[in-house]
Image (cartoon, rainbow, N blue to C red):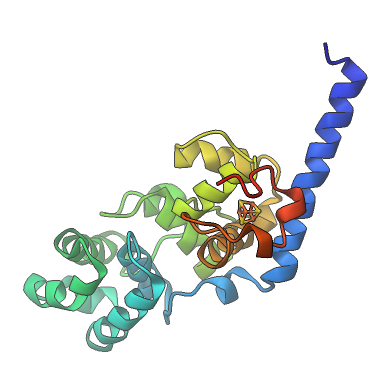
Amino acid sequence: MVQKGQASIVAEEERQRRRHIVQLLELHYPGLARDLCELEFASPFQLLVATVLSAQCTDKVVNSVTRKLFGKHPDARSLATAPLKEIEVLVRPTGFYKNKSKNIVELSKALLDNFGGEVPQEMDLLTSLPGVGRKTANVVLPVAYGIPGLAVDTHVKRLSKRLGFTKWDSPDKVEIDLCSFIEPASWAETSLRLILHGRRTCKAIKPSCRECFLADLCPSYLLT
Ligand code: SF4
């Protein structure tokens, strides 16, 4: 049986391991949320639309699509009145284009009707918009407004499990587990750093464990 004293030593070692991982991520992927986000945008509205389009799509493809989309429709007023068919043609390369087109036109209308065309800064108001879930809001709030938010996408979920931060699959539960030991001021950056590490090193299939700077601290080293 683990004694009380031993348990607190184990808990402290685990706290230190997690803190060390967060520090190493910061060392290897420096910068603030705005620098780490790979989506291109010129306003909170454009970031919101780009984030909605980024579901199941790479940022590279989204950026090539939004350059054309925002060239024609840079704000909510313009996108709200755009013909749906035209938007479908423009956003088609991002996949799920019918749903995404409908959502970005509808959310533009909702922004105009309810928020004067501006993107709200509160989680509950943001997630009331068509096609905007907690993950999207947790990208927009910190990157556009500097408000703490920790987005859990497929990379964050996979790395959190491999690194022993969570046992859950539900993004909401993963978010709670991560927020329990990461400072709010680092939520957004840590999420974006985990995404970058997932894209470059800790890939879904054949992660590059031997080249990974987290190898010494990772319980999944060479196991996946
Ligand atoms: S050691 Fe392997 S499994 Fe662990 S974080 Fe690095 S790449 Fe991912």
